[in-house]
Image 1: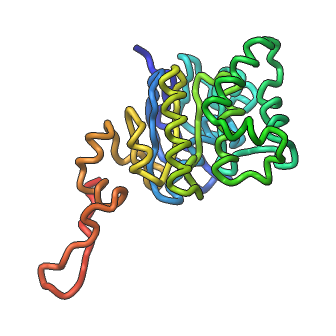
Image 2: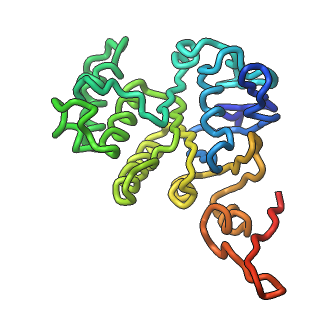
Amino acid sequence: MNPLLKITTIETLYYDRIYALHGLSLEVKEKEVFAVLGPNGAGKTTLLKTIAGLIKDQPKKGTIEFLGKRIHRLKPERISSLGIVYVPEDRGLFRELSVKENLDLGCWGRKDHGGIRDDLEYLYQLFPILKARSKQQAETLSGGEQQMLAVARAMLRHPKLLMLDEPSLGLAPKIAREVYNALSQISRKGTTILLIEQNASMALGIADFAYIMESGRIVLEGTPEELKENEDVQELYLGVGADTVSPKGWRLYRKRRTW
């Protein structure tokens, strides 16, 4: 079966001179959860912005295909209309508007009023706090509630591919788990998810497949089980066996990566 999203050796530049992505390739299969893990500065956000068409005239090289059609360098609104919805790190909410008004904006252009009612009922079951806070301004919500609102608004657009930038960033562990539990339910209903994260344990907990990204490149890929067994992933991303005593016995060192 052909992948939903196929990226082949793309190179994204800033100011036509600074490489953020170097020959990066990956595939996303339909109805699965794919995670891209990596440290700050790895290029993860640049990857999502490149897919969404938010960096003008990029990628400079390579191809991006969605549903078998090339979409690289298309305008963001055109890419969005194909079913790719991007939730940025700052959540992209209209903070001065209420929760309900933000959700209404997610329905913009839809004429299936019955479908909208059903979708809202489902999302209120998924995130009950949004119904309770429907008249409250978005900027007064907690970080976790804002993340829930951003995901709910995105789902009202019926995405074929939901892209999330650091959905657990700044959230308390309990709230982050609630958000990830909701993402698992969304995935089980058939929405394909591509998320980028620094919280490897949480992302690998729901992912079907994952990529490790460093310095604008994919350095490792595999199922969550395969990555959890990798010593470098354990040390660098899962906090297992981080430091080792030197053979000389007088200082600590870190094992050289194998990628």
